Image (tube, rainbow, N blue to C red; front, side):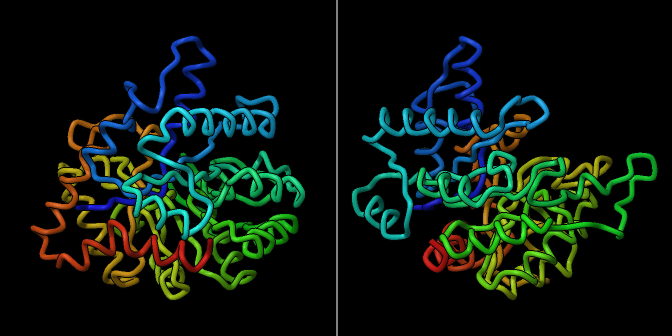
Length: 326
């Protein structure tokens, strides 16, 4: 049994949008990258479901996020024969004992919080247990790396801003509540600021290594090392643009292994997890959907990782962090 844990997907956004535009798709069965059959085939223990909206396409991020939460719980209600939402480590264990998959509700983009601690607490009460602080735009919490990337020179400026004053208060309150901080998309400075102003482990739920693939969305070695030293976990993203340089003709699984090897060298085996970004990335022929994680399992085995190390990457590292933080 693989017991896969995936720290990031955008499936709820896809389901929500399908209902908005009249094509109504559902979690049980759909044309997306994640549904019941695909998760079962990938032998999932837990899937994080992110609430994501592009704030430039959303008149009211708070209202949209609330509607997405309602959509998530509607789907949970209809599928409780095989998957149930979790708010604590004990909930995950209980589902495992009942042979059920677990669904952890997360947010990708802090804009719906509006920089307001009361709204943050409200989302926590609604079951949100992880929040990606920024997407690709500045919000009340802080700055993304996208804000400091120069398209013309293809370089990332080192003179950066990170957390705002409100953002610092938000991450500290998240830590008190037991809502996991997620720094994927955040500027390098934002990650440094989170390290400065918090104490607990945190995650980069769907980020890769910049030394392997130079995209600004990926993490530089010093930050990988610091996240690992804090006990944090980095979920490897399956998007080809973040896995390999555009002109490199390597398979996605080989590129995935290159990132695992690099994280292992820089931060050790305990900092590596999975963060597919399914339903937020284009479908690839190699890793088309959630059922294809078995290929990653085989690739790790062939690359010489022990069964204990593979278990840590697929399950153990994330579970350890959830046990400590939730």
